[in-house]
Length: 181
Image (cartoon, rainbow, N blue to C red):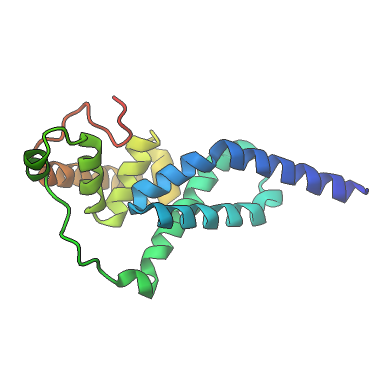
């Protein structure tokens, strides 16, 4: 086997290890973005196909996590532009925290928060997921989204205000997208 074959095998081994280590995390992020496990699986698959194609060209593998998040986010935004995704569900709109809590006092607040998150415009939702689920800085989020830090700050502020309104003002500091404090 020549040096090209050994290098290619090494790249494949590194990619396989990356998939094993990060696949579930990226799938969880995709779910927070789209709210559908099937679509999240599709987005994750699209992400890893694009990563595999670019794997040998990625010079510094220490930045691969950020690159993977960028690819996932772009796959999500592109998927929302497809004509068949413009169909709308006939299911009732997401419930507010008060209405769901009245029906079931033991409702998991994270599920209610996630339902409210899905009602946000996609860019605000993406900013909140990147900032609070993935715990990225304003600058990292801006780089992934291809916008300014000021845009990230305003989208974060507007997104949190939208969540508070959707939840009837019941968004506490201890409630985060990942259930972490």
